[in-house]
Image (cartoon, rainbow, N blue to C red; front, side, top):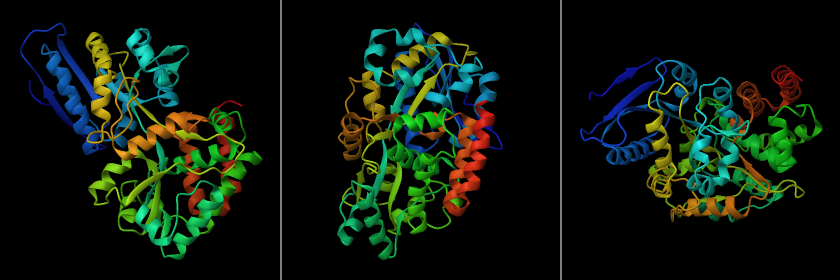
Length: 419
């Protein structure tokens, strides 16, 4: 079977064909679309698909990898035409439009199998809409503050636990000629991470989810308090300049070169930071600080998922692939520090001995009583997420525009949620 090569204006999609001639219980073609375009995730997924192919030599497996940002704009098109059998996506509200449009297959039958029901229970809610399950999780990961421990040591700083300690540390970092935080808001979701943490720490998980669900006005005083806390950092010069011109990857060198001391980011940032030359003696991690002591700590732990499109041609093989993906063994392999460097969801999997995975597992398992959010652009409907994250980016550049920004977001809320 020949490899297929696709080129679009938005993305380069490279296809890898894996085929074996022997007969097996599964036959035909299995087409898998992936958004894991960064080198480590891509290699991890392709190796996992190779292991699946070895178990099912009668299948011809065709894998298409699409740039993650391009994938987001193309998914609706390929779910309706040129439909694959399996596709990566995200949990919670990010899958809702495709569920409601009838483009994702109901896989509640898989979740009824004891092996899946018992070992993936922690994420069942994130895969459930209208009482049915629409995909399976393959990884999740913690967010938090990754920081340059050597810079903290140089300045005599320790990991902060409270907002006052965070601000105090930040001032000393600024006084040393550095920014406190690097960030790239060219793609808006990075600002969404800051909003998630500031709002959950200021007002709590339930309030944050109510806001995402359109139940709270953006002009509510509690929302304004979240932005007041954010403005405290912006006004003191905590963030790098011109962040709106950088992607999240383009913001990494500021931390690597020591021009910024920390990055609020997901654990996927660890691999490129190490590849850029930072050692584990230089790099460390802490949980985002307490702001309001009256609210329990909640975390962002986005869950990445596999789905079967409703128009898939080989649903039997697709279901078998989903079972394989969530097995304890595969979850252990793909999430270890040499691969995705994230956390397995299967309760029987082993957590890699990588120090950041261990810290993240401990944080999510024992020190996040307030709840686990999926991330702003997954918890809020897509249209509200887009307009609000545009507002977050504008606020970070022009914080004095807050009232105008919140008025715009409130108009959007009333339109989008039919309030």
